[in-house]
Structures are given as C-alpha cells and as structure tokens.
Image (cartoon, rainbow, N blue to C red; front, side, top):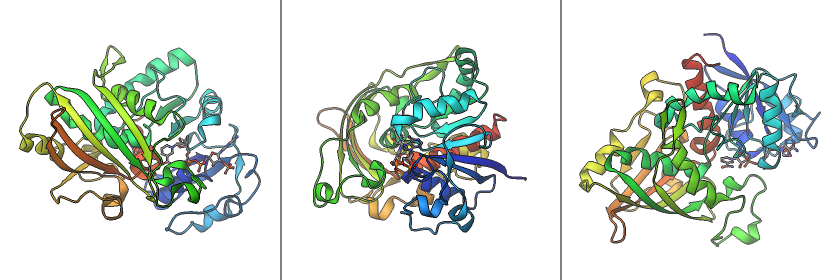
Length: 348
Ligand SMILES: NC(=O)c1ccc[n+]([C@@H]2O[C@H](COP(=O)([O-])OP(=O)(O)OC[C@H]3O[C@@H](n4cnc5c(N)ncnc54)[C@H](OP(=O)(O)O)[C@@H]3O)[C@@H](O)[C@H]2O)c1
C-alpha cells in the first residue's frame, strides 16, 4: 500500500517528538512536513528540538527544516501537538485551508461538531464531521483526542456504562512529561507531589468524559449523564498517568462481572486490526501492587490501559486504579489511531 504523507504541527514539543518516534516505521503514514514556532522556523529539526525520547531521532527528520505553522506547504493530513495558547487559531486556519487536522490540543475538543475520539469507545462520533462542514464551512476537518488523563479514565469507564454508571470520583497522579519540555522545574517536582495542574486540568477531566461516553443521536452527541469529580496532581514520574477511581453504579454487578467487562472490552481498532491498535485496549492485572508506571506503562507500545486493584468502595460502589501512557495512548498514539480509523473509514 502506498504511504500517505503527513505533517506535524508542534513537532518540536514532547507530543511532537512522540509523533515522530511512532511514525518512524508506520506502514501507512510518512512524515513529510514539520511546523513549529518562529523560534524553530528555518532550523534543522535536530537544532530546533531537544530530543527527549529513548528511541533514536530518525536521520531524515533530524535534517528536515522546520517550517512556520502556517497552511500552504503541509500535506493534507496534519497531526497537531501545538501549545494550547496558539492551537485554536492555527488549527482553524489549517482546516479552513483544506487540511485534515488530527489534534491533541484542548481548543476544539468541546465544539459540538468536532469528534472527541477514542476509537474503541466512540468511533461512530466521526459522523459529527458532516455537521462540522455545515457549521464552519471549512474545506478541511478537525478531529481531536481527549486530554491525557481523560483517555485513561474514559477507557476504564466505557465498559462500565452497561452497569448504569452514574458517579465517579478520580484523583490522578500525572507524569512530568505531561507538562511538556522543560515542564515542571526539578526543584518543584523532585521528591514531591504538586496538588494542582494548571490549564483547567480538573475541568477537562470533569467534562470531556461526558462527551466521549455519550451516544450519537440524530447527528449530534447526547452527553453521558455520569457526574465526575476530579483532583489532579503532578508526581515525579517520567511517563504514565495513574488514576485512583471510585464509581457509583445503578446496578450492582459482581466483582467478576466488572473484571469481565474490562477484559472483554474491544472496539473498531481491534476489529479492523489497525496498525496502532493494542490487542486488548484494557488489561486487568490481578497483582495487588499493580499497575505501576515503571512496570506497566509501555505495555503494547504504550497503547494499553492497565487496570487493577478492583475492590468495594464504602462510599460509592467500586474503586480501582488505572494507568496509561500520557504521550502515547494519551496523545500522539491516540491521534495516530484516530487517523488510522479515519483512513479505514474512507475519511482521509
Ligand atoms: N504532554 C502530554 O502528555 C500531552 C498529552 C495530551 C495532550 N497534550 C497537549 O498537546 C499539546 C502539546 O503538548 P506538549 O507537552 O508537547 O507541549 P510542548 O512540549 O511545550 O510543545 C509545544 C509545541 O508547540 C509549539 N509552539 C509553541 N508556541 C507556538 C507558536 N506561537 N506557533 C507555533 N508553534 C508553537 C512549540 O514549538 P517551539 O519548540 O518552536 O516553541 C512546540 O512544538 C498541548 O496542547 C498539550 O496540552 C499534551
């Protein structure tokens, strides 16, 4: 199959670098264009970016010149890992000019005509793209993936909808790679826990899951009624957002039924055997001290959510721990899976 050229907006950042690493040997997509800020424009990528990943920077990308983040020279399909302070305007300009933007940034996520996708959970929300064309008049399209903590939470909650999911409390322990590079100063994070993440992190966790878990009714998303209460914290972990979750359910399933719901959970990426799809989106771990970021975050290339420690909650019904890789399943890998789904559905 001939490969599809792609661009990366925000290529020099943490998420941009993860795009480059994940696309290095991708069977369908090849990186042909890199865009970032004026600080990087005109420089070779290796000079513009501080490469922070363990996998080697591909030679062709290292030599490639970084372009301005303006439409015109990029291929039709563009992944975005832009800073949220500029992503809204730049992504709109690209969509207006006919590009298909598959974005990580928060700016367009809650637009009712923009799919907020987790392909295993709500692949049918791609149908919103029809309404997007009508509302915005863009020649291109914008598709988004959720906030990195929300992806972990929403994937763990999706199989629980069948039990009448009604309330959720979540406390996250989020990795420093989630703050970009250079991110949180070492003085603030070493041997410490910071009980606040800026940029409206808790508000995102409390609202995005309702859209993701919602159902498509007459061409728009009917929000899922689950009420989410979130506390988000930053911890001295490189990669991997952990979430301690309690859920209230209308029905009273057995522990075995809940575990079975996670273990049997599967979706369009698995049915279509998309290149980035993990064999099982959720792995339930029986060891009492798992999941842990250092041991479990890279399972299946970082695309699996690991869940464990399911037990009765004396306040709500059940409580458990979930973990996912924030820059892979929570960002670049999620966006690549979205684009793979769109390609399979004939939307590219
Ligand atoms: N890190 C995560 O785990 C994660 C997960 C999910 C979603 N996200 C979201 O993904 C986006 C990127 O996050 P990150 O962690 O990769 O941030 P980052 O490391 O700070 O990278 C930000 C990128 O945006 C570019 N940029 C900044 N200002 C710009 C401007 N005025 N014009 C054009 N480009 C500009 C930067 O280019 P220069 O290098 O040239 O300045 C850089 O490439 C954010 O919206 C974030 O919320 C991050």
